Image (tube, rainbow, N blue to C red):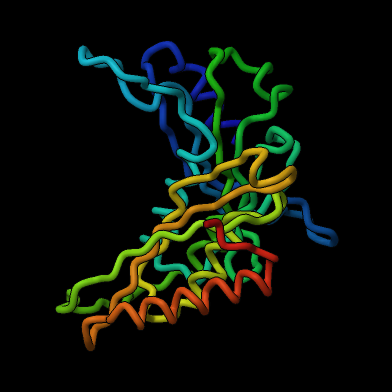
Amino acid sequence: LASVLEVLEHNIRLRDTLELFEIGQIFLPKAGQTLPDEPRHLVIALTGQRHAPHWSGGETGTLDFFDLKGMLEALVTALHLPVVTFEPAADPSFHPGKCAALLCNGQALGVFGELHPLVKQQFDFLSAPVIAADLDLEALLAIADETSATRDVPAFPPTLEDIAVVVDEEVPAGKVEALIRQTGGKLLAGVRLFDIFRSEQIGPGKKSLAYSLTYQSYEKTLTPTDAAQMRGRIIRRLEQEVGAKLRS
């Protein structure tokens, strides 16, 4: 991580946006062993504008936590990893409350987030946030599939549906999505969170999460009854597991 931050520092004024990665060994002392362990790590660092300024205008925004999270999601998808989750984490290199751990079946693969202010001030960075990830490459490669299965393009049309549920503020959206996917099973082809809403009408300590769901079968065209049954199962599961209420 320190190596990548030094490269970032040396190039910070040359571009509006910097997106760097490095693979290298780290050195971990081990009791009863003269030489340290030397596992390889993958570090990614981002800073600057999300999009370059353009004559047509529009907000460019700065790269943030969710830009890096999207990159990591693309990485684990390309490696065909099993079920991956993101959980809040604490690490001295990263900003408290802006740090998460990447896990696969409960195994920690690394941490990522916004650089801690005390770390950032040791470098000659600009004012934009610096976002970084420090991943255990050995662990990543050990669980990555060398081959993957593919399926034919579905011959039957999908059924699209949106649902919005109200949950307690501390319930992670990722947990809600995981429950939706588990309950939907093979007929649930896609889940996408598209809105988070808070208001006095919903109530203090509550939030509304709106998801776009895609139902699809490889064997038949799903009927409105099929979709209604899946929707009902999903809502009941969310009520039981996280106390969710369907938002009307």
